[in-house]
Image (cartoon, rainbow, N blue to C red; front, top):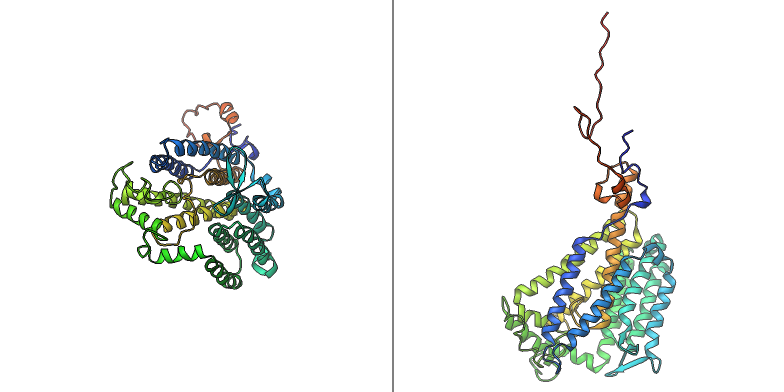
Length: 425
């Protein structure tokens, strides 16, 4: 008997592995965020470590939540898709309840948890992506063939956007619509049919953007921030000065001048400008490369899942990758004067409790997808009879698999073949 350990191993006992590139990119961005939040906020209060300590606490909570997401079976999450959608609506409605919702500068976006304020839309992004992934799995064929199946998720998105605009939160509204359109396209929706709702929604978004005077001021300041440098263009002009001052290698970590109460929100919305000032063009390219690695790896993992007919994990990876890439693109574009101010943070880098925690959960979800993809690949290899490396076997199998000494005169891979002789007449 020459039974190998892989032949004696059941497919259910095979584990997976979290994608190392995805994990490394997320850790690098989070580590850079800790350094830059500490640098950007050092002169904002009498306590130089006030915002840094808060950021580290929220990051630690986010890591704990991410670890929980990494240990959760995705098929269990998929069962509760309707509850996830109800959770999205409830989170966006609860901010309007007296005593629970918090009004800050005329916006009701936060929930008072007693010890901290939580921005509900950050959790909605994760829950909505998971719900939409489950919807695309359940109606995969209908979405490409019928109008009702395609319009239902768009209708859900419009309802959520309507609740966001009541808060108001125009930046998150456009982000949610973009995620919906991107996931529908990746889910196989008919593109000519998809163009009709887009052509209807775009003029509506433009009308909503110009109704409010403060949004109009943001657009005009984006077009020419130097026209009213001390007024509507104050943030953007100081952000551009910070980026320009950094040149190629930056002024050095901690050497920013704009963070000394010149650039508002230097540790949150405009932290990318501080990175450009202190780390220069080299630091900016490093940040963009890390996001490209994180998002690119997420899309590749999603593609591999769909290729192996594991559509729900694949669509989850697509959705999270779309979210992080779009939000990072908008945040960087705002800091560089390419887009009007939206109030979106830089994922995993900017200070902000709700954003940091929920982005960590999203990364944990992607890592779980990578784990289950690797596990499926190993199980398929086992069922095909392909040998698995020893490190890919369960621990019990590795312990039980004692090394077998090869027989003399034989190969380690092929059994010995005894010679035969024909009888000579």
